[in-house]
Amino acid sequence: MPYKCLAILLLANSISPYKSMRTKYDPQSADDFLYRLVDFDAINVYYDAIDEINNFSLEAVNNKNIASSKGKDSNFSSSKDFELDARYRAAWGAIRSTVQDVTTNGYLSVMQGLYKQGQQPSTPVLSNNGLGIVEFLRGKTILITGATGFLAKVLVEKILRVQPDVGHLFLLIKANDVGHAKSRVQNEIIQSGLFKNLQSFHGASYERFMESKLSPVVGNLAKDSLGMDVKLTSELQEKVEIIVNSAASTTFDERYDHALNLNTKGAQRVTEFANDCPKLQLLIHVSTAFVNGQRKGVVKERAFKFGCSIANELSASGEEMVPDIDVDKELQFVNGKLDDSPLESPKKLPSLNRNKVEKELQQAMKDLGMQRAKKFGWQDTYVFTKALGEMLVDRTRKHIPVVIIRPSVVESSFKDPFPGWMEGNRMMDPILISYGKGQLPGFLVDPKSVLDVVPVDMVANAMLAAMAQHANKAGLEVYQVASSVVNPLVFFELARMSREHFREHPFMDKLGKPLATPELELYENMDTFMDAVTNCSRSMKESISSSTNAKSILRHKQLILKVKQQAAYLASLYQPYTFYRGRFDTSKTKQLFATMSSQEKEVFGFDVGEIDWDTYIKTIHIPGLRKHVLKGRGSII
Image (spheres, rainbow, N blue to C red):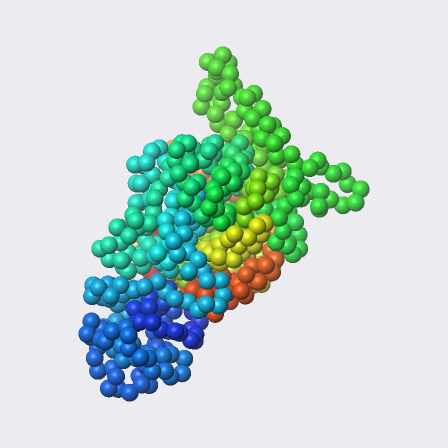
């Protein structure tokens, strides 16, 4: 049917395997040991521990009742990697006899049993080597902007799970009032499926625990003083020790005025707030690796020189240079454009249609952002304004320590709090969904180019490691969390992985029949891509020409026109990324990882070199996309 050719329609409308753990423990109680397993979330540990325990004398495991096991002051016998006394053996005997489905939830059910017996597990104790991340988080007061966003929520969950004794997390929420902010935290964080492990762990006390650790703060980075009143600002500044700024507009072609206000000026406002926090130990500013714009080759982890233009870096000898970027004048330039709008001139407005003028202004601002970005060497408004934001953070900071985290395309979780969690369609996901439904025969992409992807939990872990490493250390550091150098995912391989997944686990139509997935054509230039779209449109026209329903014919013709327009628009928007020539160096990020202890690397891992893309795409990411974003619609996996 020709509607299969409507690849682009869905796009237009929708824009581990775990390593076994072999670490030495210094056990203090069965509670601690079990709690560490919750953090590691490594299924193999369960079986290995059971086998290890069974090597001990059988008499030692007779008592399977954890409640009646002996106290914490017992002596420990030692053997191989573990030092375990009868309490450990009894505890594991109970686990083996009661937990049939060995999953994270299985661990948590055991933990709930310990809670009910009044044996509250203590915070996991990692070795003294490494960064000491868990202990660093103890008692800390942290302010997080963009807290209801994809990455920030994973960060919040991880902090609360590995260190329940964290001091307090203040979450800056864009809301009408405090009641609205509390409602957003309740609906988007506390009740989120992301936190199901914590819910299971704490049981009936979950909401009480969350409310004791989280406080919503009404604020807005697009407003002066972060949209907070003077009293609240002062109170927060007296308490906050760590600030994580993850708020941003990530729309590629956002209105220039809006993107400048949030991504650029917003970054400056957060830094100004941080300068006045007497207890501040670190500001973490979340950026994107694509702030490197149209740079090619291996791109180092370096801060921007204020006002630098990537276009000048890339210009050939003798070519005319563009002026350095004057961020202040750029803001004035945009404000001048807004002042010239009829919306700012009430006397002119009565003769105009206000809605029409608003749409024209919106489009003008979107076009302006893309024009300015490309003039200075960036591919779109989003990455351009984020780059300007980095420049302002560096210029505005006084003596406060700053870490800039630059992740590439952030996708579903690799491990924590469980594999495959995600929220909303990320960059590559509309393409995967459309293809899986048999509606995407091809897309504009260089088959040999690389899609730089990193799982969201690895980004959160890198942020926590950077916190522990750079707190109270003056200066500005940049870390790129990316895969294109150490473990590249090539587009033609992604196409193969997607095809193999959907042929084994196809989407189903309304009648329960599997949807066929065609070979995914990868078009290497815009002309051939648009020719394919035109051919699809032509076949669609032929299929509806026999219809006698005039309204139906008109509706289909309008749809065909919209598809062609949206196909050209999306292909143009994505082209800088599907033909991207930069590769993000992660040398400093790897050095940060190397400073961690072996146990920390298990709990806070962010070594993207260990990812098996075949396994991740086919068994973690696409199933996670279907479960958490599509809510299982059309799926039988």
